Every structure is written in structure tokens, then in C-alpha cells.
Image (tube, rainbow over all chains, first blue to last red; front, side, top):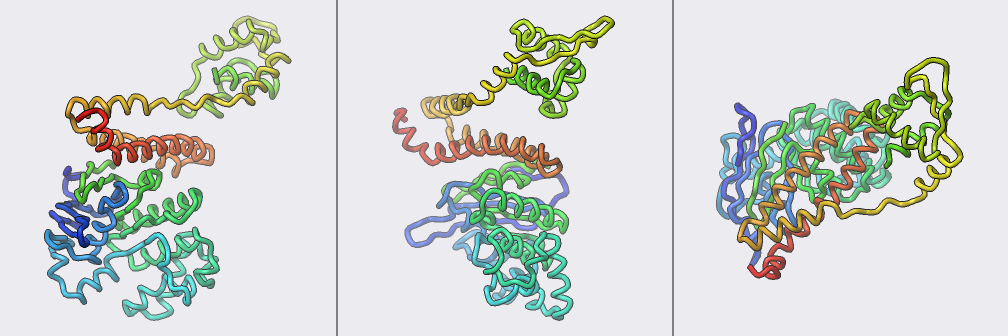
Length: 232
Length: 173
């Protein structure tokens, strides 16, 4: 593993993670560091363990052994409440699809994390509208996700992930369900916005053109990680 | 080859001087590699010899006094070139395939060969992506073309990486 520029400290560190599902060993000694503000692409063949690694980093899955630290804190030693708070406020998530609440409007979807964190309705909606604007989907604010196109829906999901201004955003195949033109637009706006807020992005993708939006890549193979140095 | 046709194509819009041709070429196609004046005049001399362009001389001396115009034969050639598809060339795979097989044969780490290549491909893809984001539509289209090609190479790399065990068996390691 090569440390990036001197003085940069990792925000998230995974060390020697092991995790299996039945007979399958998904992670077999995976170690990885995520640095503040970087866009890191997790690549590797399907079944290599990259999504499992992402879920461990995000505190969604707990490894059988090894540790994931956010700053100085071990995720496994946090209470469920602390971990949930971390996932709600400090981490942001973008998945391939099915992440927006279909009964809410797009604006309400983006405002939801703020409302859950206790923000007043008006303030939450104002900030949500601002994020929709930045992702160039202000016009679908009043629509339900089902009435927006796939590309628009995904940009709404990105706005929702960014609205709390998280430290780390986890994105699992964020363009997987989109055509190349819409995928490019999502990536361009997503990465620009993340860079603007200073959020680190952990991006799982099997698409090289999507990975090209990253600062560096880590290749997951057989449950282990091979990191590449940070290129800026 | 394509430089001659690009210059011919520019002449279809009307006769031009050499320096004007160079400027128009650089603007439209020379973002990565601008033409040298020497190239323009050498190409024009060849096209002239083949009867694809003709010269309209103006009073005075020197090459810049010459105005080049496309001939009917030039227009026919140009049209033929445009309708002729380019040969799809498997340019990189053969070299990489050789490297991977040799690595396996000599007991070296073939996955490392592929990883190094992936990293190099991604480095270039990042560069192109940045250029695309900062550029105009022409940059975007030119970069996208290169990106799709690099992506095709990378897909092959991934597939090969996934089949290394089988390939190792085949080459007898």
C-alpha cells in the first residue's frame, strides 16, 4: 500500500478483514485506507468481494475478524445507535437503483435525511431544493421518483446522499442501470459536487469509464485488496 | 494518409493558401498534434503530383503565394475514402497476450502484468476524462472515442485476469 500525499490522513481504515457467507469466503484479509476528499474506485471481477468490502467500510456488515476504523474509532466497538448515526449523517449512500421512497416527491426524498436528523421542514426543503438545483434536476422536485427518468432519479439519489454533507459517500455501481450518456452526466455532477464539499467517495464499479472519474483504484481479488497510489 | 484527406476535405470549401490550410487543420483536427508547415507543403506536392489538387498562382514569389484548389479527381478520391471503412485492428491485445503467456511460461506473476496494464490504462482514461470535463463538445467527442477504445482493452484485461488459471493450464504451468 502506498500512502498518498504526505500529511493526508485516512478517514477510514480497514485492516485484515475476514468475512464469509456459508461456504464462500468473501473477504480474506482485505486491508484498505480511504483518504479525506479522494475518489477511490473499488474494481475487480464479480464475486471478488468488492461490495462486501464496501458494506464493511460503511458499517452495514460487521467482519468476523479485522477492524474498520473511522478516524480513531472502531466501528465494531460502537453501539448500534452510534453506528446508525454515523450512517445517517457522516456517510452518504448511492446505489444502483431502488433507493428513493416511491411515495414521496423527489424534493421530499432529498430532504428526508435532514428531517430524520431533526431539521425543520422548511429548512430541509430549502436545502434539498438547492441540492436538486446543483444536480440539475430542480424540475423534478415536485414529481414522484416513478415519474422521473432513470438518469434524473439517480441524480436525485446523489443529491440525497450529499444533502447532509457527509465525510464519505459510498456508491455501489451508481450508473449500473443507466445508458452511457446518462451515466456520464451522473458521474460528472456527482464527482464535481463531492469534490466541492470535500467528501471522500468510495466507488464500486466494473465500468472502466466510471472508474476513470476516480483519483485512484484499488483492485479486489479473492477477498484481498491491491491498492494503487493516489494520483493527483 | 488521413492528413492528405483532411487537407483535401478542407479544400472542398474553396481554394486556400498553405498557411491557411495549416491553421484550419490545427483548429479542426490538430488538438493533439499540430501540423508542421513542411508537412502541409510536402502533402500538397504529393497531391499535386497525383492530380488531386491544382495550383492557382498569385503574383510574387515563395510557397505562400500559391493557392491550392481541389480537382474533380480529388473530390472523387475524397468521396471514395469517406465511404471506405477502416480496418478494425487488434493492435494491443497481441502484445499483451504475448506478455501474459510469457509471464505464465516463465513462472512470473501474470496477474501483475495485467494489473500494471490496467493501472496504466486507467491513468490515461483519467487524463482524458479530465480533459473532457474541462473541454468543449469537440474535446468531449474526441476523448470519448479514445475512452471507449481503452475501455474495450480493459474489458479484455479483466476477462483475461478471470481466465488466468485456465490459461496457465494450457501453457503448462
